[in-house]
Length: 444
Image (cartoon, rainbow, N blue to C red; front, side):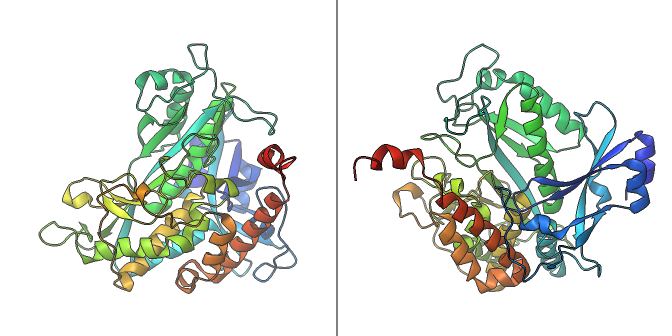
């Protein structure tokens, strides 16, 4: 394990970014002088930070919250210690786990929610393996939210106007930004694999190497910060909104998942003949059955549901299939020991800790209950009915009423998460959109 004090000395650290991922997946925490940080072995911060919405409001839900808004004790995870590569002087960043005054974990903290699910697998002698693929857009700075987004101006001195899927030249347009993203990521030991131009204008996808779910969630958390910072330094915004443009593809995070038996080091999804087995099929069945109950995590914002549209590079139902990119659950072509399922439903705006926890929880229930999936779909899923929830309110209702998901993710987390997201939804419902003014003002 990394010795934090020794690491600080070796890297001449003056200051620490003490980080906590909140429900949105954004970084909360404190800047702390290195000497003070070492003396305290972490820091304290109000438990109420988890009650804050994306709009900056606070829910008045208090059933599982200390009514005095007491401090949490935030303990560093030494394995997450990294340099802040864009800082002009030596600054460390480190991710923390949250504990109550009695030393019990804060049950609704996203890292703990994922840890709890991983503990269930550990008790079975299993180790989940996850490989994320995340999409994002580069956009021209948008300082007035009443105006639609525009693509940024690339190195050729003009805006992108057409889709250039898999285009190398499309990537080269923003080579300076992408070079900084890779340089910053390398300095933080983020295990990026490939980068491709996606379907949208100035939209890109980065694939991560496979690994431990908690470590991969940490890496995605840091990667989002990194991309935003690198873009900002070139007078460009980077956005992980699920649907930033009307009429263009949304952005997702695809989660490739497999499970390894710790004793034998073998993928539990294949039998002795290297063929997909009943555990694999039950895992898929669990994902299918509990997709509606976990949708509020995969699609956590009102904007998220604009991505769930037919024929627009996003899933609309819970079908699964072999190397079929139109379904929500895809089984990629692979060697037997790499047999896995790719959950294509989560948007890029999801909290990765929670989306990994939700996906692994659904698969775990499927295996425990020996569920049976539908037959794999061999045609386009876009020609079938939309069965995923289409708005945040409905998703929250389904999640709130799902006893199996509550049992694994925890009542404290579900209760608070639902309240925070309901408040965000109610705030959105108070907004009158341009569409309403354009089509309803004098026509109804």
